[in-house]
Image 1 (cartoon, rainbow, N blue to C red):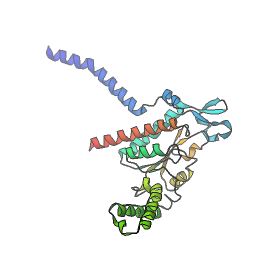
Image 2 (spheres, helix red, strand yellow):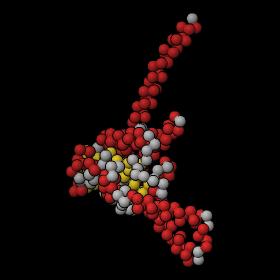
Image 3 (cartoon, rainbow, N blue to C red):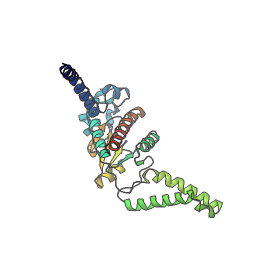
Length: 261
């Protein structure tokens, strides 16, 4: 009798458990993306109609007050694809380089890079970062060596003026190479927040076969990206929404990798 009751309870709860698992899987695959949330953060606002790139037209919803409106259903679809790609990369312990050099995004990029333990470029993209990688690495090693000498007190033997010059040099080198100090080889992908401002990064990545994920506003060409995300790349709220999703995806993927060890 007890066995029969136990089996009945199990059969009653099984559909509920299955529904929970299905909901959990669905939420995971959607990355918690909701069109209403994106609309609230202004991801749909593009540029004036005179600035539209013809290849962005498939991602546009319409025009409002002479400004193109991005179709957020398509943004959601493309953002999910990009996040799935990022998730897979992190699960395979591969490297993503964050690139965002706009004044309003620098701190956000550095914060996300620090939290996710990723390399980043938040100042000007240095020409040759990829195409002249070996020479750039030599400069990075020089920077790290000079930094180490200051930490260990080796620079104390120099005069006050010489030490001041070293400090100035270290500040310049930190701006140029601080975010890529541990990048010893090409990353597997780059994530670019403004593909027009950092077009050189996109070009160099493409030349070296590095996958490119990026925001594509209405004035940008989405076809230069492997994983374009049609979205407003000017509003801080829009960029923060995207970066928060990227950060959440990376941290969850890293946590899962640790758990599976």
